[in-house]
Length: 555
Image 1 (tube, rainbow, N blue to C red):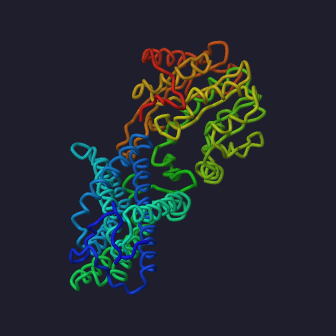
Image 2 (cartoon, rainbow, N blue to C red):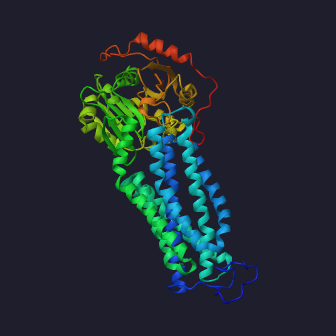
Image 3 (cartoon, one colour):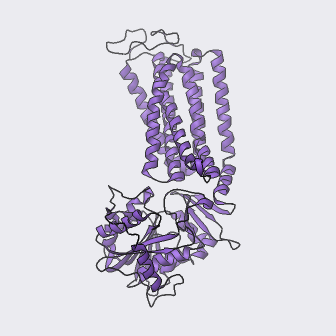
């Protein structure tokens, strides 16, 4: 280390201005120089952790509110990184007042980052259905928060560099190395704390508010405690008032966060929200299901089950695939138990294996009175075995030719987390697991609204070695959102059909009902034939199959 009285080595920075522009001046600190440097680096560590939490919070909100897609994540990250560069350049003007500037930046960052989740959620809940000029309002606000957060994070490092050099001069490379090490380690801690601590224990809103409070306390304490002598009395008073106001806003919001969430849910889902919980995987919400009102199941804000017409969907999903041998059945997804209910109506079913990622959905399907009544307590049948696992990973270890029927009841492929479950590799694993004369049925989304996605599913199944037949059925309203965008219930696009692809290993399958099977209320052989012809008229030719490394589905 080079003390402040020593001349700077050749090639090092020569003009780190002190409070009065004197490159050789050193601050009078209330602690020793080594302790002061340690405290600054500790502040860098905490601020970096908070900054990454804000970044991940915005990415999570982009996925939750506006679609779980690579595009949304890329927009947030690219805008934020761009803004960090602009913020670093802008902070050069504050170097002569580095302590006051850093204190103001941290107070602003704590307020913007801490309140970002609540502000975005509020805008989406209360104005997301306005349409017109405001149709892209939530997305615009998301970009604005990404820009503001990035600008403030980018301004931190130049100011901290100035402050640490004022404590004790060292060559520029060494100072950058020390600051970078503290910054990167802090980012690691923040990146791990968000998914494993803040999100599961506190949720998105409270986690962001507490992170903002920590940011404000550490930033304010560092400046007011360590660099107090570098501030004018007026600057000290303003900084104290600013931090107190920020903490008051964040604290008040934290106290009211539960009431806020309930009000926002009522705004989005109506007054009949009965169950709302966060599992390890997603937000699960139930509305209705009592006093004659239909039950609706939402997963991460997307309508997954509509009690008004789920029967039509699940009968169309399960029964055509059950025409043939069906002793052993595998259901991928379907943790709500409704596809299993239809499978168990067929005589001769000896075993049903369900592979569901979210154990919380399975618990709800077993124990919620309305949902368990709707699925006929199917998951409690002794022939049913439920495994909590990712379907792709589970299929990799599944025995070959183990199942006569595979029912793929999974979210739409436009949702990033589901894209791999509609890939050529995934269907190759499913083909290996299927008996030679077995059948696989896949829900491919809305045919009329997203024909390219639907026919990409068909092309991908064919590329994996399947022979296929497509069909679609109509419903009264969207039991499954045909895309990743989350919309309020009252304004959700009513995609009024569901598309399915029936696949077999060797012979082209024909969508038909088992003549010896149970009575099906919403389908007949004639209607299935008409549904197949209707789907064929929408065929998009020349599509490339989707793979793990090159997904082809739109988001």
